[in-house]
Amino acid sequence: MHPPRNLLPFLVTLAAVGLLSLMDAVMKLAALAVGTYVTLVVRSGFALAMAGPLYLATRRGWPARPVMRLHIVRGVVIAGMSFTFFWGITRLPLAEAIALSFTSPLVALYLSAVLLGETIARSAIAASLLGLAGVATIAWGRIEAPAADGGAALGIAAVLTSSLLYAWNLVLQRQQAQFAKPAEVATFQTAVSGLVYLLFAPWFFALPGSASLPWIFAAAAMSVGGAMALAWAYARAEAQALIPLEYSGFLWAMLFGWLFFREPVSAPTLVGAGLIVAGCWIAAPRKPPEMTAA
Image (tube, rainbow, N blue to C red; front, side, top):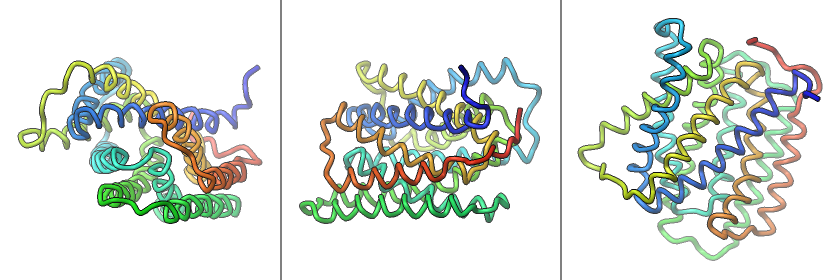
């Protein structure tokens, strides 16, 4: 039995967030082994090799100038967002880093109103407030823990910087999804961000060891799959309705942080997660979302 059509964008978004959370854990493994910059350069190459042929086989011409501009802007934003995030998670527990990144969906809810003209529903506001309360609870638990070292402080700063860029990325993603198919979105975001990374190759690139390549390849596959799934979902439902589902990434981060790194989960973390899940439930549609693409 298939789920109702109006729920499909939400189910796809939840699955994509889980896949990308697993990718975060795999990227952390690779970044700890060979460095964040090298990992991102190699992942971009793998991802482009996966998404590019699919796009070339299905494209109906070169993107129009306004669409190309969206591709370029989002690719540059993703380059900065990805580097600061993955550099930050090498210095923080995965779940705590994801918690800090939840400032971006909160900002993006209101950016979608300013830049896209979407109306902010009361349920979306309530969801964002519950999510914020969950993040504040987790942050309080971190403050009460033993003092963080300088590396942790830099990691927090990096993840917060990434979260601001991610808020912009979420709104660009909604705009992009109105004009481009998932394969095109995945191809151009990968190509543009990869070109940005290559600008720094003369100073920072070194060939990674062969042991890390399978992990980076797996991360690339998850990145492409997650990007295409999100592009499909954002073309079929409003950004303000899908963005609160990003909070479910915290639950995935708790799971993968424990499985991959044996990172413990504190009581404030569990309370915060409960508030975040409640916010996601409130954000779920009570009527069919706007269908913007077939």
